[in-house]
Image 1 (cartoon, rainbow, N blue to C red):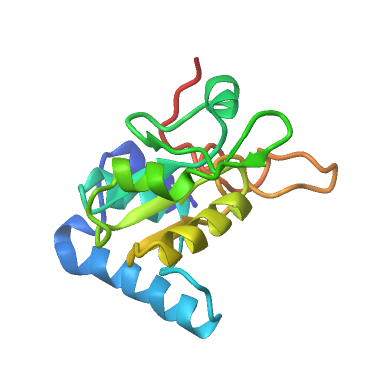
Image 2 (cartoon, rainbow, N blue to C red):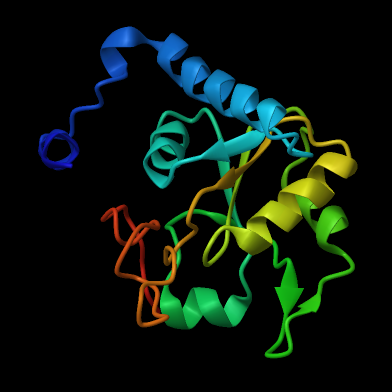
Length: 169
């Protein structure tokens, strides 16, 4: 962790010296793991890898949480938004794949899906893959991370815990 923090503080991307091959290696490893686990979508990437891919313009980040979550909990700057579920009752958005297709026109583009914990984004990744998206990945642990012993999020893993960029309205 200390090395990652120091590298981030220096604005140094350790993959930069290795070129695009390092980004492809991350995606290749995620695909291989997904195949081994028989996942119905391209794979799972860490929040840190997701941010590096987005910053290098190698991927699009799509937040699948509700609009309310994005506003009150926070969101990644310049991320796209297509809600997997809506409202307080979390009803599945029946237009999810059509809305995703409207925002991500190239179904071969690398698309990284983010939710609160990685569960809804996994379901969204499965639906996107069924709709023909060939490079859709889930971001592990989502925006807020896993539950801790007190059944709370934000204390272990996730986008915010890794101190990646985010905004709150």
